[in-house]
Image (cartoon, rainbow, N blue to C red; front, side):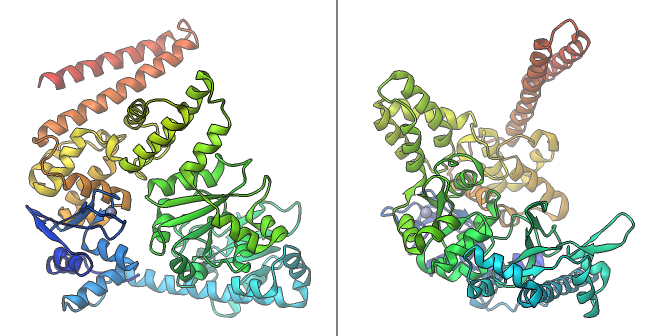
Length: 589
Ligand SMILES: [Zn+2]
């Protein structure tokens, strides 16, 4: 990806009036200091989409999406950062700069090129081995898994033979240096510094960027006793785990056309679904989806359908992926499969059409959870209703959108015949008690952010100098554990590094963080007007967190027997007293 000099990006954002750009797509009306219109990212009849021209950001109060002018184009045109910048530069008649590169950057760009070339050659070589006479037993294995030669070719499946260094020799003959092959993750260095092929006697699945360049491999064991069953490339300068979705290079246009992606877990699930003609499929490779992967997907669709095995549902990677996708604002549906089946076995047994039917009759994820949990409890008894509600509350608490949350509350109320108000209030409590398994970096949720944090964030955008002066008085530890701590920490770092601006901040936030910041910045007034007051509260909150941590440590030791642990408990009590003194001093000052 091209790296533009920051000065160029800053100039571009000055030139590219966000109101002018958005007006190409949305009819905007001036309303006070901001502009309002119908959100282009979700269907609505009354405008909740706002654009702030002076500060250069947009925010939708309906679906929560927000960001700067570049982010708008990225989302609306479904392009990456580089292309969005190109389009904007063209629209506003700015010449794209020569790419600014230091020697080091040039070297690493050259290295990345070499690594890509190595992967291309290696993928072709693995493919040749599969086609060779020695690959016959592996071709048989592929056929036994119901994958046709055509699909195998489309996926670029290959074979790494059992020899110790066959790939190494083949690649070195082509002029690649041993050290570079180690950097590419294709050779493993042993203790005596000799190197051997990382992938030996494995079925090879190339992992590609969505433009088709191979950047890594997944190798499946071919013998029953071979460990691990799946061996992946390590992280390299061109491959970061959790940033690539397997198969997106093959499926992106189908996903865009149908408006949804089918998410499966394994390579063979992918192969079967793809082979059945359902081309809009991606695989998470067995782990839970990351927010970065979700962002990749969002460029092509806002809806995802997952297959669930009813026995394993509610646990594991699939459920985690569902919750993350819901939190990232995706529409998520669940297609239930018969017990013990995955897409691979299901399609092989019943065919692609039957699987397509399952997808067609898939159920919204939250509804699915509701029904599944309700079926597990006797809702005619008080006890059953309470258990059911307790199971559902944390789930409701993680729904990012208030309107959606209320809708869910009403469905809960209906099922349990409890008053809607009661359920809504309980859910609000679940939200404020942070009953969430997501880290703040992944999911800052407006409901969990303290007033002090909101105050500082509002001021960072509207009155940066005051906010920064206050923020720099805090220590990094003060921000740890705050819901929006990552945002404040980033602002601090920007200020230390190369000057802070609201635009520079917005540009570096994750999707979820940007949505949070634009939501706060769109409010008319800050929650707390004085920045010093916010800092004060944040310091006190840190003391409070530390006090709670010490207390629970004391409780733990006391449970083990106060007499034996007396010395440690005493030390903790002293620390707690000191903290309380600090807190009192903070309150008085
Ligand atoms: Zn919206």
